[in-house]
Amino acid sequence: MEQVTTEQMLQLMQQMQQQILNLQQQNQVLLGHLPAQSTGHTAPAYVLTPKKVKVPTPDIFDRKRDKVKHFIRQCNLVFTGDPTNFSGYSNKITYAPSLIHGGLAQEWAGLKLDQRTAYVNGEPNAIEPFSSWADFTYQLEEHFGDPNKEETAQRKLREIKQGGRSSEDFVTDFQTYQMQMGYNEKALTSIFKQSMNRSILQMIYGFQRIPNTLKDWQDMAIAIDRRR
Image: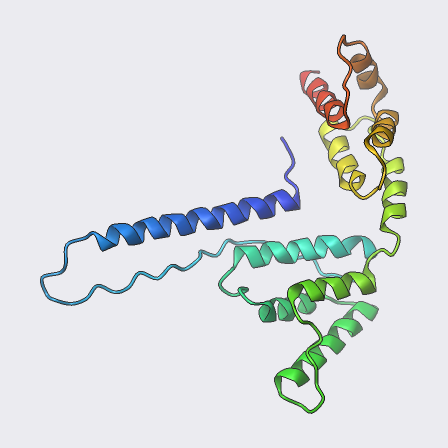
């Protein structure tokens, strides 16, 4: 079964929201063509209300550098699933800090929430700590993200080995870090082949047509695995 990434899930949810809105708009048009009521009463206006999609609560963020991006993505899924309650940035930057617990991360979140409270209450010299949701995520990554993302991605990518795992799992892990590397496709393809299951690599080299691109290598590895 093909795995769905968080980004793909977010895109699917956005498409579902748009489809729901389209259906509601079609219903509104149909209602407008209904015969007028003989009582003379005006039919109530049909209000388009985005439907809420149930999304799991994000994991607690506890300052771990490799969890920052994942935490932000999970929050974005919640916001996309409930556009009514999270239409503006204010509720977003109230919700997310409530899920930050433990040590310095909790102290940082508490300080920011105190600053927001003072600003909302109109206290003298109080300032809004976040100008937008994007500003919140930027500050979160600046404080708790990996300062050497490219080096970390290079190390993790070279540590990935397929072994006895399925090619789908292996490719998913590899793709997680390949875009963060800063390497060209030739270098990435070389690393991918070095990390592949040896028997699958030999089968590909036995074909008349050898893959030309990294994506071709990944697709062929998955196709061979499915046939075995």
